[in-house]
Image (cartoon, rainbow, N blue to C red; front, side):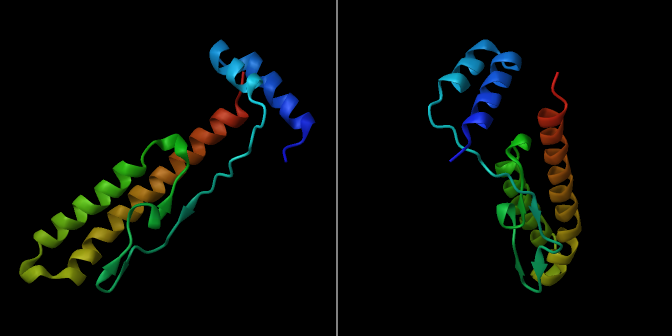
Length: 124
């Protein structure tokens, strides 16, 4: 469903700027498709005794290659926060855990936007 003019334009760009083998792959692709990329984040990750983490909280561009790292970091730091709580204070642990995880997710989101913009709009 991609217009022929657009496909030809992209193939021309690919031949011009990509390494030869990648340019050839693009040119030889008979049915190209467009993959939508979204930047999604939540303002909160914890809700009383429940939380969301990983891709449920932050959907990042693939440019960051950080999906598994983000989810693992959320889980490990949450486990540490709960373990370090006196009397297993889950509510307090979540309150202490959340701000840094929101910061991490937003930093990765803005990094992905920056990398995507650089690769898409700052071509040589």
